[in-house]
Image (cartoon, rainbow, N blue to C red; front, top):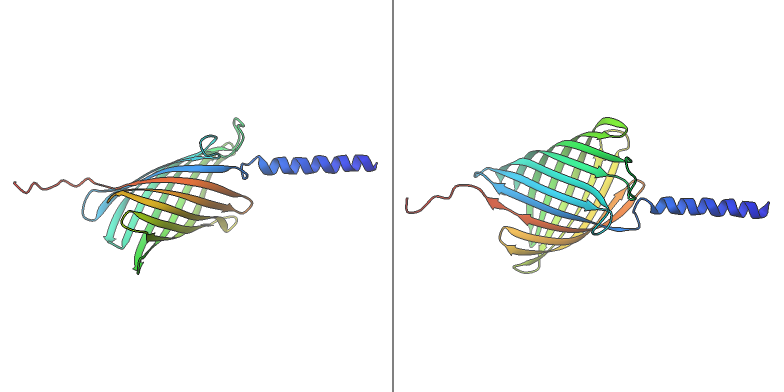
Length: 230
């Protein structure tokens, strides 16, 4: 009887341990990202974005995110955005066909405020999202708000440090959605072209994931240039 009890406890412990590891929390994943702000007039620009997210650094696909939007530049320190995103998600760490896959169409409204304190550049980003999700369990509509505080500090003309914390608040079900804490070192290749290599701590209610991030930021000016000879 005692031997059987020990066996049952050992089996339960192994199952709990196996389930805890099967969601990828013990693996270092990676997000590879592109961001662009494409100026089309003095007050308007187009946001372009693509993210490729993996449960592991170079394999085990997790999520594809494509996002675009129209930015209205109220001033150099204030930007309002209306946009759309498409998200394709494989929610399973292990390759389980037909499980936890979803596609999402998302509409968002965003407002950015910037300010400077000495060498520190602060950016406050407020975003509201309407999410239309299709999965094996059917279709669902969800709403949430996001707030991100970002700080950038120059290390010279080319190098800089960047950090942010972003909280996600659900407008239905559980209030807390997730929190993202990020730190990175960046390099300005050109005035409008930079890269960042960083580390993200992505915390959910019942899970926590560590992610490397490689971001490319490329801004363009699509306005017609005036020929000084004309």
